[in-house]
Length: 164
Length: 164
Image (cartoon, rainbow over the protein chains, first blue to last red):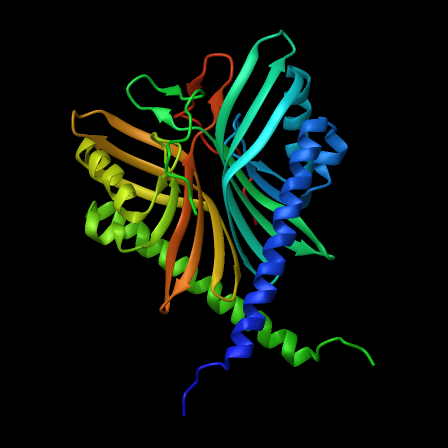
């Protein structure tokens, strides 16, 4: 006897997966809006209490929402405005109440001392559906390093190798 | 009628989850062994064909195993030996055939021009079970940046905020 699932089962599974993927995509889009608004309470509402974050700035990791919030509170006053915050090459992996995503994130803005920023960073996020909402339980944000000079490469642009 | 699952179902679900977590943990441990052996074929056998990697070095992303292999082939000859490769604060999230992990990774070694390396990096990995094996479909590896000097902070040590 074959163990293969009937076609309608596979179709239904695929439908659920596409539905969950759309939920996570919407959540990321809502996060981008919160980021642009620079409202820390709104931004923090996306994080689980036990989030572990590997941020652009030290230390190596922030453990817990209260600790991570302090990093956001330090960073936000350094920005005057965020004019663009877009995600490219977004890939979403989802199964049941677990998901992880990765993308390249493009920010254009102005710092509080009137410097222009136009930067691409790599973003990986881990999500869990908790009480019906997709919460960020982990994230890592970074740029690559020039190993000769030890400089962080803040001005790299994506190559034309878009993910389909 | 209550929709709650009977206790034995919950227990069984927890058992499956612990079993899958152990599988992923073993896979990470096997990867660490492959890394220490500096055998590129062994290392590459952990990656899915369509892996997307955000590595320490540019470009922003490597799309596909063939492209990522080139980065490993460039990096490996720069190392003479890897004396220690350990993961700390390992957290594994798993559901069915999907998992993501994060940890702090500690490497001690010697470069081909006899420089000592003793470095901590942040590691996030996304796994999918493909044909019975947990394959890395995504990873991001980085260190934080000193925003004043734009230097990559290669000599940070973990703070005593270990994850339990």
